[in-house]
Image 1 (cartoon, helix red, strand yellow):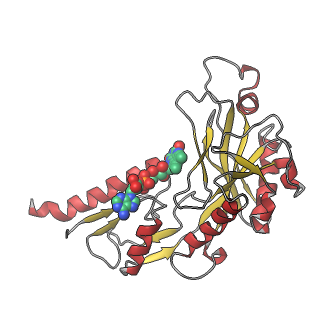
Image 2 (tube, rainbow, N blue to C red):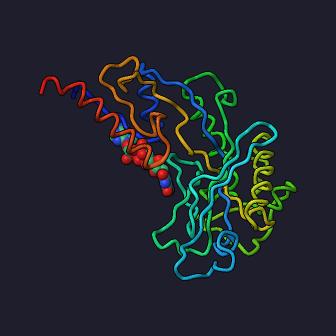
Length: 282
Ligand SMILES: Cc1cc2nc3c(=O)[nH]c(=O)nc-3n(C[C@H](O)[C@H](O)[C@H](O)COP(=O)(O)OP(=O)(O)OC[C@H]3O[C@@H](n4cnc5c(N)ncnc54)[C@H](O)[C@@H]3O)c2cc1C
């Protein structure tokens, strides 16, 4: 089937389609993104820190937060996709890989709250100059996480043990929400030092802003690698691919948005560009 207009809104994990597009010659570039872990606390800890003595008030929903820190090695460390009263969820899109993400149900009534805690990475960190090398970079950590137990169990560690590079042996007050299950592991062995050290520094700094955030028992679950797209499908001022006329890379997968709202807005912008191109003929 042929068409004059193809809107390509494939999401940031359509690795098979990324490959096809690259092989067909569509212009793709590397792009910075972030990787890290999920950090889980008791919802009550976060509520107390944010709401003080009103933490139990029935009219208040589970509290959220947004924290950031610039590490000494220059990396940005930040929380992302905070899920109050939510769950850490499995999000692998390929076999034999472990990937975490997070979600809350409408009631936000689970016992834990979690967030991604991420460190910025850029093309200089990737294994090669190949336009899809960011995907290879993601795969390194997703595969390492899988190979710990050769299963979809995610590696977990108490933050206090992460600081000491010591494998945890039992959970504290917080038990993981990740399914199908977890395995204790020293996360320092998964990540390069520039990620681990930035995570440690960032979490400690955030603990000064949000009481309880950097407690010994705060639970880290790895790995979070899909914060945003590792590629950009380059487009011109008309939002078309720079070398394939009529192809409109759109949303998160194209590397022009991150999250639900910005992806939707990008879709509207692309639709407007297509309308303006064709309306003269209507
Ligand atoms: C567990 C989880 C929780 C999240 N929570 C939040 C949140 O709270 N807030 C937030 O802002 N964002 C959240 N996100 C991120 C959000 O889902 C994405 O940013 C957003 O959906 C991107 O929109 P998109 O339209 O660009 O791509 P997507 O929503 O990923 O849609 C891409 C679609 O293209 C399809 N596709 C891929 N390749 C092909 C092909 N070759 N042919 C046909 N179809 C194809 C895919 O199957 C998919 O349906 C979350 C993501 C996950 C996984």
